[in-house]
Structures are given as structure tokens and as C-alpha cells.
Length: 467
Figure 1 (spheres, rainbow, N blue to C red):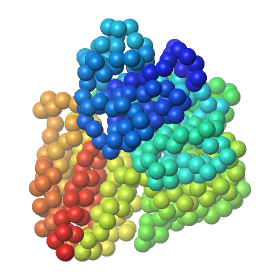
Figure 2 (tube, rainbow, N blue to C red):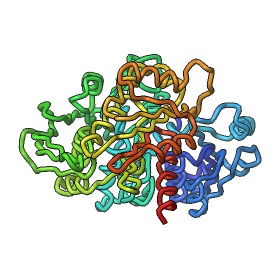
Figure 3 (tube, rainbow, N blue to C red):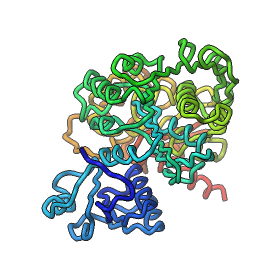
Figure 4 (spheres, rainbow, N blue to C red):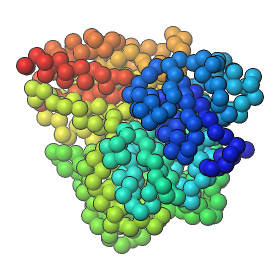
């Protein structure tokens, strides 16, 4: 098993292959703060890599064996293949090589309190809620979020204390490499089927994860999600449950959603006792569950309950999670990272009551595998959109073998709702919404790729036209 202890002299120079990733960049910044020499490479530069260079990290564009010179530890992301020239050079030179998840798991062990937020949906939001609550605590936490959170001015906060907070993604069974003192499982759904065989494979992975926890650890489960709650039988850890009117340890009762803003409020009960009324600044019932998990994680780790509640109530969102981008001519533009059928339905349901005219959803499917294997679920996800525009599939890490196309998804959605259209290219989508959108409409760009650019370009071009 790989071990990494801060301050030891085994490693001096760490090179990150794929340093521009949200988690990799956070780890690189953390290791720099601990006194290590840091370098890294990525296929393209980005605002993230620009920020790393501003910190003093050497970042190379592209991959070349010469770029690992001087490194005594190589950390690589899941997107890196074994034929990567830097990876191959490291193996040939017998430099220690470790994948990102294993490295993150080893880093966790350096902290007395480590909170890892897992689940198919809601990881970034819940992690961000906890981060908002604890960022000013005397714990001085180190925080790694899968998005840009204004409260910590980015995706990482380097603390000086013994408190660590991070997301824990299940892709490639990476959760099995993490060793938190507090584990949160929000939900378990069918996803990442380019790696997992089926839902049973996913459930088995989470069972092993829960089973890795010791009796000294804490496991927080969403009691409303049957798959997540089933993990109670797989662990020796202390259990805490959260839920909406489900007789949970941390429970939301009398939930009400504001018909104008879409923001929910609820009465918080802990072990059957009413503690407070929570008024949220983000949309959606799913965020009620996320907030319960965040409050539980804080309170169970010694953070004052009033400060935990204040943090959740002040949380107003993270980049690409129902993010308000702007408004022009009475047309609002909102962006969301949703790329799974369950997430899409939840996002549309949260947003729909706040729409005066039409909800125009521009969806970019993310990966061919997910689109193909979850096609039927996707076909039922867009019910609350008045118009659904399906863009070309964002390939991400995959190759196009020609067995699935966005037009197939359009046909499936039409079979249920008859309001989907295929417009593959972003330029053509932009032309369409310029012509068809009207005051009172909401344009929602949705997906884990680069579809957000359509909304940004719409706002820019419309603003220019009105000058």
C-alpha cells in the first residue's frame, strides 16, 4: 500500500500528469504549501493551470518525457493512459508512480479529521455547504471542492489545522482508495457504466467502501435513498442518518418551497428535537438532503450547531450548479452541471416554478457510454422543459464507435414528450435561441462538458446588440 507522510524526506519533487484537473490542481497546490517542489503537465493550458503557475508551480502544455526530469514521485489522473510518454518514462526510470485517488487517500491519513463526501449526485454541493460552514472555524481546514466556490475563492483552501474535507468519487472504484474518518454517502445510482458492469457492481463497491471504515469512524447515510441506506449493514462505523420526514437522526420536516425563488425552507429536527428553521438560498428539494448531510457532518465533528446552520443558510451555490449567469431583455440564463437522468429531472423540477414563460433546456450529453446505456432513463428526464435542445455528445475520455448519437436521444425524448430537437453545433444553437427566445424565458445550459459557453455567448452578443 502506498504511504505518504507530510514532512518526510522520501520525496522532494512531485510531478502531476493531468495537473489541470479540478482534483489534481487542488492536490498540487496543497503539496506546494507543504514545501514540495511541484511541476505538472496537461494537454492544454486553462485558467486553472494559469493560477497554478501564479502560485509558483511549473506547468507544461503537452506531455514529453523531458518534463519529469528531477521528479521523484509521479501522480497521474484517471484520464492518463499507460502509453502516455511521461508515464512510460517514469516507469522506465523506476520513479515512484501513483494514481490520483491513491495519492488522495494517502493524503487523508495525514489529518485527524477527514470528511469525504460521496454519492452519485450532490457531492460538490454538499462539500461546498460544509466548506461554507467550517471555513472560518478555528480548525483551519484544508478543503478540496469539485467546483469553484466563492467562499474559498476557488476549488481549494489550504489550512493549517488537522481538518480535511474533500469529495470522494466512485468512478473506477476510487472510493476504495479513500480512508476518511467521516464518510458521507448521499445516494447510489446507476452511472459510470464505462467502468461498472451494472448497479450491483456499484453497490458492491460502496459496500466495500463502507466495510473499510472502522468502529472509530463515522458513516452518514441518506435514509431516503434505499441504495445508500442499505450500506448500514456493511459497516462497523458509527451510523448517522439524514432524511426528509423519514424518522432520521437529522430530519427535515414541514418542507416548503418558495414559488418565486424556488428556495426551500424546513424545520430541522435532530434526534426528534426541533433545533431551528432552515431557510436556504439554493433551489431544489435535493438540496434539503444535501444540507442535512452537511449539518450532520459538521455537528458530529464538534462544530457548533449554530455555526453549521449559519453556514448552510448562507451558502448560495457553486459554479455550474444552477448558476445564474445573467439576464438580457427579460431572458434569464442559468447553467447547471447535471449530466445524469436523475440530476436532470431534479434540476428542471427545481427551476420550473420560477419560470415566467418557457424553460428552454440546452443539453449536451456527456460520454457515449452514459448516453447509450441510460438512454431510456434520459428519455423521461426532460418532462418539465418546454423546449429541449440536444447538442452533440461531449466525448470526454471516450472514442466514438458510431453506435449512439444525439439524434437517437432526441427520438427517445420525443416518444415521451414530443418537444425535443437536435441541433448539434453550438453556433447553430446560439442562432436558434437568438431567434426564438422571448422575455420571460429561461435558457438553461446543462451538461458536464462545454455547453455553458452557449449561454455566455448569448449574453455577450445580446448585450452588444443593445448598446
